[in-house]
Amino acid sequence: MRAFESVHFTATAPGARLIVTGAVHGNETCGTVAIRRVLADIERGQLALVAGAVTFVPVTNPLAYERRQREGDRNLNRGLAPTPSPREFEDHVANWLCPLLAQHDVLLDLHSFRSPGEPFVLIGPEDNAGSLEPFGHAAREAALAVRLGVRRVVDGWLGAYAGGVARRRARGGAASRNADADADFGVGTTEYMRRVGGWGMTLECGQHDDPLAPEVAYQAIVRTLAHLGLIATPNPPVAPQIEALRLSHVVDKDDAEDRFSRAWASFDPLHAGDLIATRHDGTALRAEFDGRIVFPNPGAEPGQEWFYVARPSQRVAA
Image (cartoon, rainbow, N blue to C red):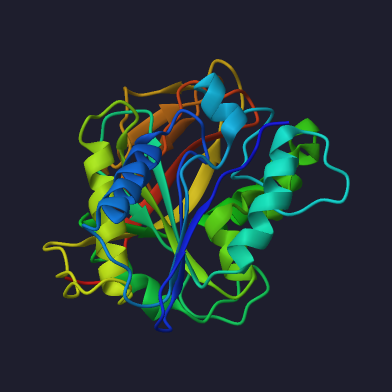
């Protein structure tokens, strides 16, 4: 059994309890590099904790990291919850990670993505008392998100995911019996953090192999420590020209012959009426409004998520 590693620091003065995670997906290593750089800064005395506490998890999923692939046995960032009967390696990770998350107030989860693109941050919902993702720390998330050093802020993940679940169930068939036909399968690190009373965000720092991604992750850690008052550094400024987007809905791939109209990249602009893709039976999928395509996956299997669509939001502003 592979060991799990976390490094914890506590200051003498009270303050927020932050946890920073890297390599939730084993091929997304920018967070690991950045965390180890911050740890070296602390060891050399270049960063000093003056209040609160912080825990660093350089490699959250050691099996996937060892294999240099997204997953060990399955995607850790789906259906995240402790289980009394662990079967897959990620079940053991969850049984260690979930109690650790619950000991903290704030999570910064560092990721990267497959295709070229600009870094962005995913935050949770607006404050609400609904059944899907009740929440009461939206202002705190927004205030940190705009100070991480990236200009694109995206919300609406779990709502869009749940909408996809509802459509799969309505269609019936094999897709409605898959794990991703359960809304809770959309729960990852930040969603779990919110469910146990905390708050946090996922920072997508750039493409997996982008040499700038570890720097984006490093600056975000330092900015988070400063914003929370854990280090004696002024609060970072708000990034200029913030673009706020809300995920509207997800479209699944129905058939192996479904085809995109072109090679889309995440956050490519869409204009109402644009042809996004064509189904195997000739049905055209067109943009319903001006917005952006998000997470297009040309390699999706039938019954899997194919792409998301986002619309402009007034959630945060520069």
